[in-house]
Image 1 (cartoon, rainbow, N blue to C red):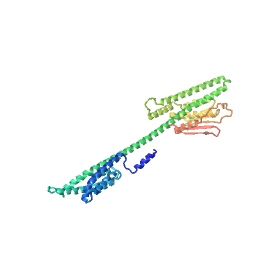
Image 2: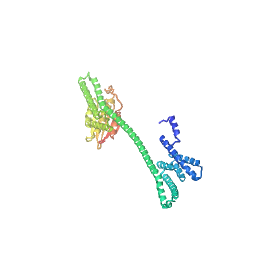
Image 3: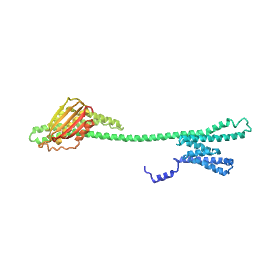
Image 4: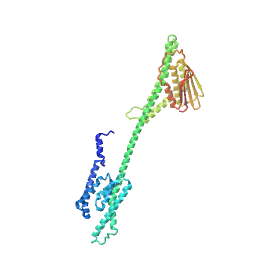
Length: 438
């Protein structure tokens, strides 16, 4: 927070003050005034006993009593002054308030105990001496009272404890309560900071989850649309080329284009339906983040279960053959069932690799290999160099450059290995290995 000039000036004024609030200052000034009056009155008797001028005793009492004004800043000094003037039989209010302030302050307990003991001894000695004098003066008519016996010490002890014990105990209680409140306030502040940090982290996690969901949806849309539309564009180019020369082949290509368009729309509807089922219902009450996360997880699981599997790879290769590509499908090992997300990821990798072949190597020979191993499944799509006389060179399929990135993200998310790059023969190869249980 930025401090203004007025705040700095106010801080400079308060630098020599020790009161946190105005009413505290008013209270201390009032107590100091009462204590000064008390000590001034008691200073008259002290001056008479000490043979001093009365005005000097009054002035001495006013100065001593005014020390109570600094009790919050220097409580030890106030108690020491009250102990020092105890033989003069003045400053009883100063001693009581000083002990209370000392016990309630942050002074170490050892110092508090020593000063409390010194004050108690001083008050006890002064009380014993004064009572013996009073008893000796009043003993003329009461011979049964012995000033040297147990009466004076016991009564003096009770009077001393009655003067010193209550303010000391009450000060200890107030000090402990004040420290407890400060600790609770600090704990509340720390909890508030922790809650703020947790809220920020929750917001970051929610933002990260939204970003992950956007990426997943974009990847799904790319996988569903790119392959089908690429084949549709290839068939449309072939249809344009043979429309006049071979009407029967043109009809077959048109039918294939229609079938692929319907398949693409069906897959889009299924994916959008799963996303709608995974969203929270609209309503006036806010939906907890945990509920949204569970709904998103359920949607992802449903999408994984309803998605394509390894059994559909033969049909996928057949679609590419119908588009004019020479695709060979090779299976190694004994086929078996895998986790839904593993089969779905393997299918998407092969699908995207074939889509890239249609985009960048039209007419090239393609070999799709699927290997079932002991604890993993491996797939590889390798195409040869693009022939120079390829008739589909004018198809001009657009490319967003996200196909390989999406495949790598899918495979790495399941703990697999993904490798892609050019071959020595001038073609391109995409390989991926997935664990049977991610």
